[in-house]
Length: 492
Image (tube, rainbow, N blue to C red; front, side):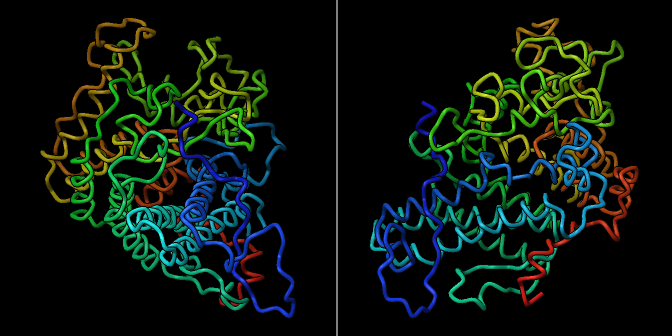
């Protein structure tokens, strides 16, 4: 049952370490570091609080803004004057006082702070050592997750690895991107060594060994460590993951936490305290009381392949709301629902049918086995093993075209249209590199990955993709560190 998913412990009080004080009155009704981190139950509460930051039950988690809106896949959307700070991110005019930047920075550093507390204090608790090590491994995974996003958005950031014991500890110098990635590698290798392959149903949603290996493979990929990316992705392949038969099931509440899911962020609607996702309201049309943000671009829509008979890659209509097709609630889509581009994000809006608007029950899948296959394909190609790289790449394309064999709602169900998504056969490195980049874009579209990919592809690619948005790689590669951090952190 979905109630069994591990969900954020929203009622957990913020955990602060003690600072010296002249007051000797015992605090009532709240914990300090002297009274918390003493029992197994407190350790579990603490790690649950670390997961709360990754969820989308708080509008401070603006991962979609930096993953999609900053890219060429979507624009801000919404009404012209609504969430103007997101618009400044969209056109690369955001400055250090931008509200979206400030909100995201503080939110993810809160996640790092909570993770640091777990990593530091939980090893001192007298409890089952296997559970203790697992909890620390979860916190190491989550700390790497938070730093992965911060490093890709901001570049050099403070590398905080311990709780703040005094006011001086609140300041930290900027670490290089290389040092931040090195810490991610350390955390993820440690997590992979202690985390289990799977959990009982009641613990579904916690980081697993596969999640640690998957993010480690991605970290290696982003640093161009092709042999290590191949090794980590190959290790993950031995753990029992597989592609869903139908691509669309990755974004369907009835099929959550399936065999393709490597790390999935849990949501549950109708709960007190609130544990649902706000994304279905932000991405849905006004007729569903939505704000129609994150509007896909024509450039993104045109990336999807079509046959000579104009049959589109079926992933397009699982991903984008567009004219001539039905929206997630069964109505025919109206282009006026998205004044910005005529298109809407369909993947995350699917939750509008499974929970109240603004309280969606649909999970966000950060990493799928499909991405692991694409990481493997890219690593193999960059290692000049193109013929081998074709194998995982074509598994992705085969699954996509075979939607026609499994989705009864597709016109022509039961037979794959002629020449739809044929296997890639050219194994020359340059051609295959382009094919893999194309496949990442359409396979993982609107899952908040595109901007990071554009940046890692380099100056020429990024300026070609984002030039119309005012992007310059030299001056705009990273978003500015928030002014509040500059004002309070004396070491930067």
